[in-house]
Image 1 (cartoon, rainbow, N blue to C red):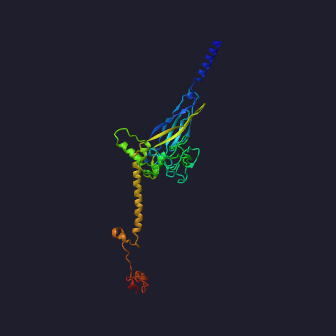
Image 2 (cartoon, one colour):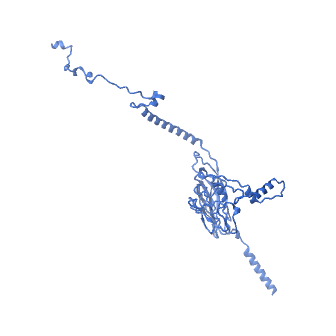
Image 3 (tube, rainbow, N blue to C red):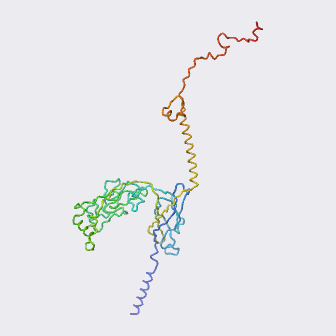
Length: 383
């Protein structure tokens, strides 16, 4: 009986061990984020009609013999500044071609190390924070499902005066629902809500004045003395809490107005996913980083220069004709022109008065008393 039980246990153990063996980790594909560098010549006189870059997306478990069969790829989000296409939607090979080399942005936008939500491309929603109720056309609205539990004073920008219990979701510049508020500001291109800016980002835009001594949120005299003792001490016997030092060393932030300007497109991106017989992968982002090598073509510059010279000559000729029409007008006199360019101005019109009449220019045979003209040679013969 004991042998039978041992045999049965061995069989069950072998079956369970076999069921645990497999390629479970790669049954559903996993898409990975990646960057692709591309040299771009965005000069207006470059003479390059189009530029392309080819690449291949990175997916774990994309071999032909992997579990789940052959993979298929699809785009979730198209690139913003260029055209995208699959060269082979089965192998994951793609082609990208930029279409715009400059964009309108702000001083808090794509050129900044930390772009502020709502200020990236225009100043209409700058900054889009959860304490700007009524200041924007599409202000954030309170929402109990956005993790705002426990906030005692949401208008106060000092984090150490707020209670942050479990369940509170702090805005990090990427969430559209946080701090008990929900963003209603929509992106004009994607028609999706723009993330809420953090309080630190709000300070950089609107400015911030540190509270004074013994003011709410500010340091007291004991905090100042404690920091001074720690700074003067040459040993580590005096330790100051980070929050106390932050209150004492707080510095005012001047407001930075939002200004739009044209800038070079630094990068573009698209999102994709892979699918097989077992399901779909996660969404991965492929970032195409532009390495700017702007330069103009010499021949094209020469052609534009010659065309500009010819156009300038034509315009100067037309202006000369128009000027002469005004200057060489016999019935007008230009006082200012007569002082500086008298050689080109028409002299004054000389009034002509003739004392003679038309009768003085008549031939003799038409004058009175000379109705008939006689030939003096034949006059004697006639007599």
